[in-house]
Every structure is written in C-alpha cells, then in structure tokens.
Length: 100
Image (cartoon, rainbow, N blue to C red; front, top):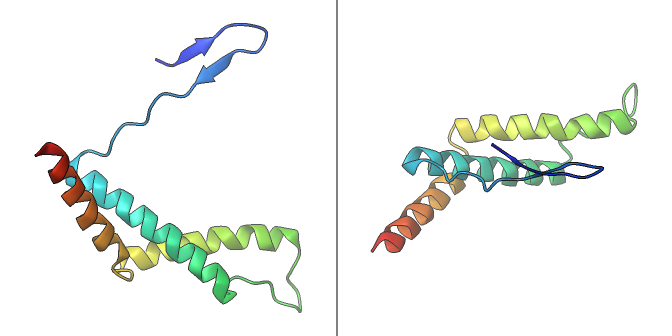
C-alpha cells in the first residue's frame, strides 16, 4: 500500500523499488543498461534522422528516439556488444562481496 499525505493536494509518496530477484533480475537490469547505452550511441550516428523529402518535423524527431530504443533492445537480445555481460559479472561479484 502506498503512503498518501493528506491535504488540499494529496501526494503519493514513492515506495523504495524492489531489488532484482537474484541473477535473473540482475541480468535483466544489465541488459536494460546496455540497451540504453546503445540507444544513446545510435542517436549520435544519425539513425532515425528525418528525411528531407517528405519527413521531418518535431513529431518525427520525438518518435525517432522510440525507434532507436527498440532497435537497441533487439541488438541486446541478439547478443549486443557484451556490455550487459560485463555489467552482470560486476553485479554478481558485488553481491558476493556483500554477503562475505
């Protein structure tokens, strides 16, 4: 249940996020981070930039980031660049040190 402060404008206080469940959760978070990194890198390549003939405009620019994000997720699902595995290994080692 969420905490709610009363008053003229009730405010929902965010609850602490649950930690990922074991190795599967840590791997999923590592993959999310790699996808975010790849999406940012794809934006610097010009991928999704508007065409000059029939495209362009603010709407196209805004939705191009969604396209890059989905393309980055697919890249990670297909093996990515290995960043997720490196992050995952570091997270597992950090968890092991914490429990020692």
